[in-house]
Amino acid sequence: MLKCVSPIDNSIYVERPYATDDQIAQALESATNAAQAWRKTSLADRAALCTALIDDFVSTPDRHAEELARQMGRPIRYGAGEVNGFAERARCMIDLAEEALGDVPLPAKPGIKRFIRRDPLGVWLTVAPWNYPFLTAVNSIIPALMAGNAVILKHSHQTPLCGERMVESGQAAGLPEGLFQFLHLTRDQTAQLIKSPKINGVAFTGSVAGGVDIEQAAAGRFIPVGLELGGKDPAYVRADANVAFAVENLVDGSFFNSGQSCCGIERIYVHDDVYDEFIAGFADLTREYVLGDPMDPATTLGPMVRTSAADFVRGQIAEAVEAGAQALINPSLFSADKADSPYLAPQVLVNVDHSMRIMTEESFGPVVGIMKVSSDEEAITLMNDSDLGLTASIWSSDEEVALALGDRIETGTVFMNRCDYLDPELAWTGVKDTGRGCSLSSLGYDQLTQAKSFHYRVKID
Image (cartoon, rainbow, N blue to C red; front, side):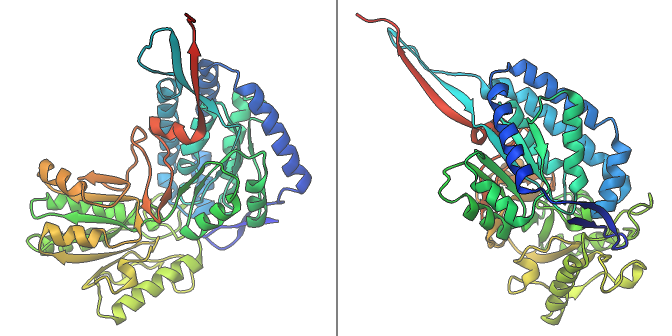
């Protein structure tokens, strides 16, 4: 049985049986049949049904917010934001589909007609995580459907209702039977599913270790494998930055969702000219968080997803402090903070360096390390000193300098005066151990389709 243990009180919130071998085989068979018919439908018909799915999904934001809070601990006050983000990304990808999926014309040649067409792959598997269970899943689900594929969704055991709710909206919208399905699977079952010749591509969002498992399962299959893995995302606050603005946004970027975001801010480098001002403001604003029961509308910081995740972050903090780091936040200010629980107060560490795990290893929790730097060169060197590269941000009033620095940062997305954000019209990708592939934007359709070239000699002399 799949058991979702709520981080609120460690009670079992959802139980579901894992799929049987027969159910998996039936899902593959019905998805394959649905894909063969769906690829023949017009783009307009696909758009209409996908839009109906979105409309149904956003019609119950309160239910989604409550279930999110109980499954993974995000404060209920923020649940509607993810529902709205789901709709924004999905509608954007529908809007981009006509251009992205249309035939690619080539310069004319006498007597020759030639173009490139994008064919659907067949059955697409999305393996989605718990931390942003709707936003991460939609990155591939709606584009895969728009591209003419069937989709099987395997959601995290921590957020099983999220997979069920999306598929329910597809059914309410009138999607053909078998076109969009969920399966509750074990890790081994997921690996076996990827090995099936009826799976034609897979998208995975999760840990680096999980990405290794996915790649190994797909080895020798020669199918597209999209991997969006970890992040240790840096920010650089230049001497010319608007410090108050940088503080406000970087505190949110560090601690929203209890820091459980692939593109959340985990390390900050601040020019020594503004360091003291930045540190004082950052610590003061951090102390304003309200840690507690995510079902309470007053709560702004919920529990981490499980006690073991919180203990991992506690270990990083303790190790850094023992090595000379200074913790600026007194956990006693947060009455809900308790050892041996997922409730963890936000923490800001200074006097840190890259010999400490807190600055090099993904934390995925409510902690951030802040270092003083004396130059752009030092900041860029430290920002690039990582095995991961999802996003990075530069805080400055000089667009030209920020653009030049951005060219040098090893990352998938670089921001100026923004962080922890995703623009669905831009490619979402990473470098190094953050993964491979690209989702969203018009480029996101490339891994969901197979290019097919047409070269017709229409005039024979």
